[in-house]
Length: 163
Image 1 (cartoon, rainbow, N blue to C red):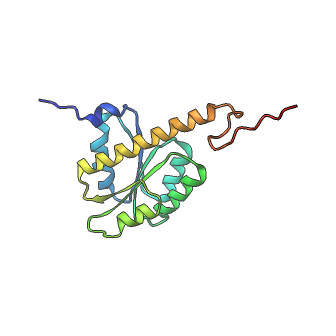
Image 2: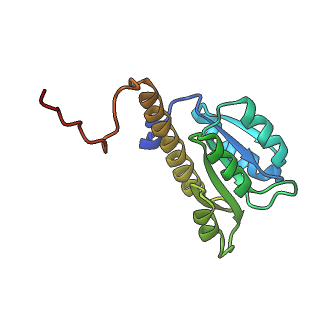
Image 3: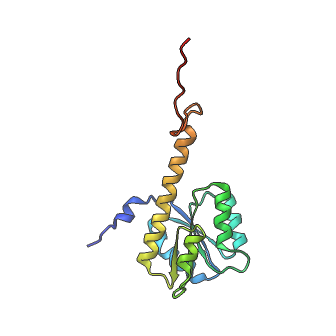
């Protein structure tokens, strides 16, 4: 019997992500996992390729290897913050890297994955990152549509003066 996992029902085809890794095997494993669901997976093998793609495409999730020769996932996370995008960065490293989870959290990454990939874990983290990005983008769109006259929730109403 074919079962549809809840995660498959929630994510629309055409969702996009970027894999940044110098290892072809990382690209192939993630493409095998997400392509059947209709995802578009972009590939970059260097940090500079990743920045180029991100400046041209609205990609909500980046799965980035921890060690790149020409850049660092932390720079990518800072680049994202400066542009106030809803980009979610997931850091990848070899299994047994005891510092990865802490480094990812301190560096404002969404999460961490270890290679070789546990497919269920990879799917779970990447889908959560995609969903989080979509919620932030939706909230941002709603906020931009609000009239500028609407005050913040912390503003106190002005007292009426008697004439």
